[in-house]
Image 1 (cartoon, one colour):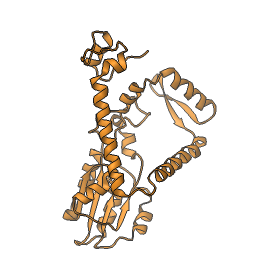
Image 2 (cartoon, one colour):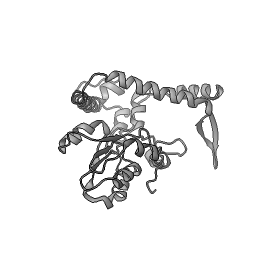
Image 3 (cartoon, one colour):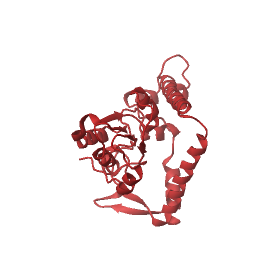
Length: 266
């Protein structure tokens, strides 16, 4: 599928940026390059644009769209949380404007293989950066979320009018779950609370310290993955192998060796 994404509030964003022809601008969520294109149009050879995204499809689409601007554009495959580091590594000490359009794109929702949508029968993936090894499915299985608990909560949300079920044409076994208008204020409020929490969490913390925190958390995640992988028997199969082997002789471990997504259920 061709990468397609509607740039929200495009006119308003460009007006508020007040782009200077010799300025330096960053889009931390580059996407298909809609905002970026309008910024680059206003830059002279003395200006520069940096686009950051972790999605390979977005990088490819934006690279093509912005190709006419040549050396005025630098595209970086990374997370916007790494913005300060990425810019410092390129000798940038200050910028004139930053754009962040947070959330998933319509492309990610429409492309079933990306695993963001409930509209299609596809594996739960939800990785913004597909270089990451762990998918949403892996996380759900590690947490041992039980289907009956999910079903009970869905029934409650349907009964209270926050979700509606929609039959899938051609397959009576499947239904789509759609949020109603009643749910929208709660979703918006949740997003606001999350943003407020992050602002409070990082209040009075400078960019250098933030980067140190992020890097430490990333290393902790890598360490945890190694611990879980190297101690599969002890953590998951409950046969408690302490022999130093990653897998014991029981069926659950043998199955995990052939299918790493499989975790035993109890």
